[in-house]
Length: 125
Image (cartoon, rainbow, N blue to C red; front, side, top):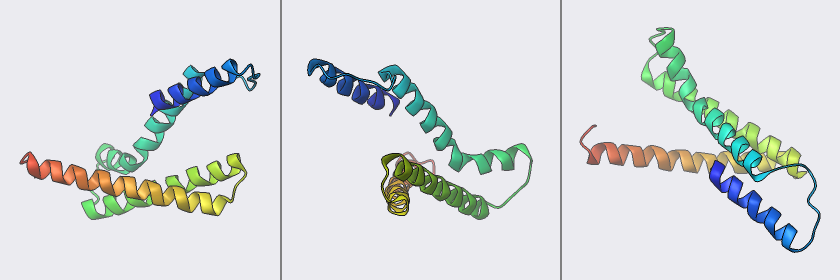
């Protein structure tokens, strides 16, 4: 995702440059790519945090509770991202939050199902 952000930003800047448009704002494709990469690392860690804390602090929380907490934290993170997106783009924040939650949830369910299918196919489940 960081690479796609880099390429998208570079393409946008190249297009503006070819049209002799001024580009202001100080962003660079490398900076955009690194920021996107860092954001994906941080946000991608959210569903795992509760499992790491459980293991590190030896809390012995049951798997169902850990999964529920992980889902809630992930959903809250998607909502927060949507709110920030709405503020940034000056669009309806609630609509943006719900849209981001829906898209993120669909992606999460697909990833979970794919992982389950692969585990069964590889005989690890």
